[in-house]
Image (tube, rainbow, N blue to C red; front, side, top):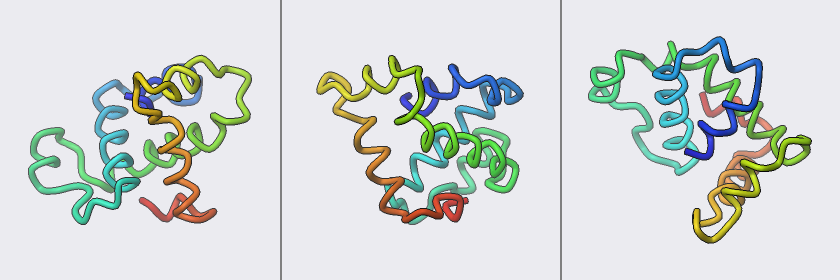
Length: 107
């Protein structure tokens, strides 16, 4: 949900329909969690999107995530930094950094 809420406050992401954003956020989340199979044939069937079709959207979400720490809009990041939300914001940013500067290689 953190990734999706970040995209809601970024004007550049408005070009993607909600189903596309949800699928791309799921793909990126799976990759950040180092899942062996980040996008399975079942997920293609369930969403109607292939990993390749989600690529540009995932890159956009990565950009939003990279910019979140320095953004003037901090409400979503603060919300997901709280224990109530298991400090997901910290975890997402830490995992993105672990992929070392070239997060776009995730897709």
